[in-house]
Every structure is written in C-alpha cells, then in structure tokens.
Image (cartoon, rainbow, N blue to C red; front, side, top):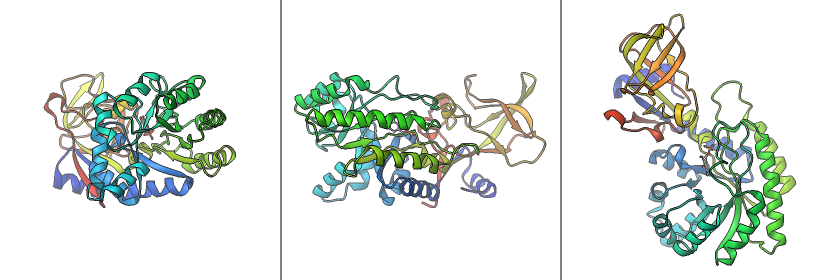
Length: 379
Ligand SMILES: Cc1ncc(COP(=O)(O)O)c(C=O)c1O
C-alpha cells in the first residue's frame, strides 16, 4: 500500500480527490485467497469495484468473475473479445457466473447467446429464464443465516431451504438444467459460524437433490462475505479458511466443484482515498471540516456499506474530536461526527485507507461534484 509520502506526492501531481488503487495489493489478496482455499475457484464479485483495470489485473492472474448486470458482464467480456469463438465460449462457461437472482427479460435475452451460469431463487424466475434464456445453466440460491454480518442480504435473496429442492425440480421440469446451489452469508461476515451453518444446509440439499434423481447438481457456490481487515482486531482469514477446508472435506466429495464470489476481500485494502480540506467551521461545539469528497462520492460506503472509514492526517498534532463533512449542500453528506484529527487548515490533505470496495463503485455526480479521479499503481 502506498506510503503517506507517496500519497502526498500523487495528490500534488494529480489533484484531489484522488482514489489510489494498488494492483500489487489486489494480486496479494487474490494469491492469499487461492492459497488458503485450494479447493475453491474464486469468482471476483465485480460490483465491489468494477474498474476495468482491476478486472484486467484479476483476469491476468487467472481469476473467474461474478457479474450481476449486463454492463458488468461486458466489462469482463472485453478481456476475451479477441479469443477464437470456441475458446471464448469455454472461458465464459468456466469463468463467469451471473449471480443476480433477479434478471429483467432484456438482460436474459442478451445473455442467452453466451449460455452463462445464472442464479435464481423463485418460480417466476424459472419461467422467465425458460422463455428468455433457455441456454443458461442454473444455480439455485438459498437463504442462510446472515447473523452478525455487516451487510445483510438474506431478507432480499434466497429460497428457503424447505422449498429449495422443489425449485430445482421445477427448473428441470421446465427443460432447464440446475448445476448447483449457492448462498451468501452476508457481506463482511465476521461470524464464521454463518459459513458452517450454510455448508450444513447446502450439504443436506445436495443429498436430497441427488436422491431425487438430479446428480447434475454438483456446483457448491459459497458466495462472498469474506471479511476485509478493516481493523487490527479482525480474526485472520487463515482461521476462516481452516474451518472452511475442514467442512468441505467433511461434507463434500472431491468431485464437488466449489466456487466462491469474493468481492471486498480482494479489493478493500487496495484502495486509498486522498481528499482536501476545503472548509472549516465550528459545528455542534466542535471543529467541523469540509472535504472535497463525501457521502455522495467515495465515502458512499459509509451509508450503503455501513463501513465507518477512518480519516488520517498528514499533519502532526494533538488529536481532537471533530466532525467531517463532504462538499455537497446536503446535511446527509456527513462522513463522521466523531473523528480524531489534529487541527487542520484549509488546503490540508487527509486520507482513508482500506476504502477500495463498495466506495468509488457507488459514487454519484450529485450536486455537480464528479467522482474522485482514479490513479492506478503497479498496474
Ligand atoms: C451474489 C453476491 N455475490 C458476491 C458478493 C460479494 O460479496 P463480498 O463483497 O461480501 O465478498 C455479493 C455482494 O453483495 C453478492 O450479492
């Protein structure tokens, strides 16, 4: 990750707000994931940060991809455009999963020619896929406990385990092929027990599907949720990996294809934001600083992703509690009401580390402020 001196130099050269992406860190995280979970094929969840340069780096490293919209599919597809048609199709089969259980019919029609793997979790979707993308392979998404995960997903997606095998049979009856089962334990999952419970559920469903005559169900997709080390108290990833590997070997024979969709795990620590103090006032009895990036920009993750990014100063001094706001006219644009920073002056720079996931990806142009410029290191 870039040193404070390097961040300062880059900000002086390129201006602020500046979102710095360290591609060496992405490579390190991908290697750690692969090394720690040798049975698992890693599909990068593009939504975490869809920057084409990031997708390219992971493509070059040999990663697979989880896409959740047609534009995301095309960002990945750009990397294989030049391959001969047959190899391109093989690559899509092997390396892309369209992991959004709900797809509009136009998206399905555009996807159909690529015959991708897609997830589903209800009967309406079975019928829609049958009509608009009959060449797709299916993965049933089931709902599992998301207890204690920072971002909860099970209230929106996933068939209940009780209806799962009926939904698999319904898809086969519709002439489709169900190839596997997926789940998501919730994003930034620090409760490793969620995975253990979800693997038990998936194991039971595999057995039931096989006993009802569907041996084609052979892909286990354990979703995302792998936590990023936002603070020093996080349990090491290796602990989670050890648990997962033991459960894989206990519950799933070697011929089961195990895949995962890590998003934030691969990119969170690769992004650093540098912003500038553009205003200063006293608010609520404490100093308030206004930055040229905020909740409608790179700090959108504070709101959407529930991550309280810490701000650091290049200036030394005694830290005091202060508020930090973004540049727009909306009071919602409040990055923190209790940050610890030394007294800052106009033009000072501050930075936030570990801000690579679900941040720049959800930046807007609200109020006319463009998203932060992106600078790539070690591309
Ligand atoms: C279906 C699916 N897969 C993977 C991910 C990536 O999750 P994470 O960033 O927690 O790894 C998400 C995130 O929302 C998702 O919805």
